Image 1: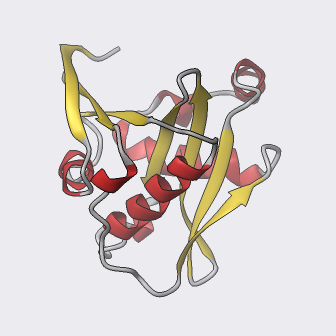
Image 2 (image 1 turned 45 degrees about the horizontal axis):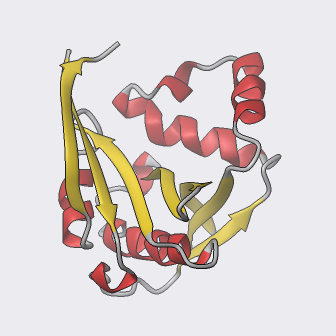
Amino acid sequence: MRETVSYLEMTDRQQLVAAEPVPGLTLDRLRRDSSLVVELQVRIGAPFGWKCATRTEQEWDAWQAEHPDRMFWLLAFDGEPAGLAAYDLHPGPVTEIETFGLVPEFTGRRLGGFALTLTVRQAWELAPGVRRIWLHTSSVDHPNALPNYHRRGFRTFRTVEGERD
């Protein structure tokens, strides 16, 4: 299957174009050992063929060990788990939004724009002096992903075309 991977960035917190607030939508820190970390990634990624959707327990353990500093945050709507954001801090200081998404039952409910707004605001606050936030998305991800990133103020800095594994 052909795939286009788009890499996007923000280089100033003022570039964020905030979506209208959604009452009841929150972003809260998750412990790394929370069962929701794996559960939500699988539920978010399964419809789009993310590798995480088919990992074994041993593969998840290895994945966690490879990323000991990754931070996870729960997107909740009226107290129910609705999605996940995961962050990696890089030198520079740069923050990568490694995972962002909503579980299927919360897509199509006009939550994505504000969920991304909360996620980006948090990304700017994770380390002192953050100068860049970046992420990537794929043409086989949710069709609203790339337009949502652009509406929130991200700009595409690189695209890669290829075959998906």
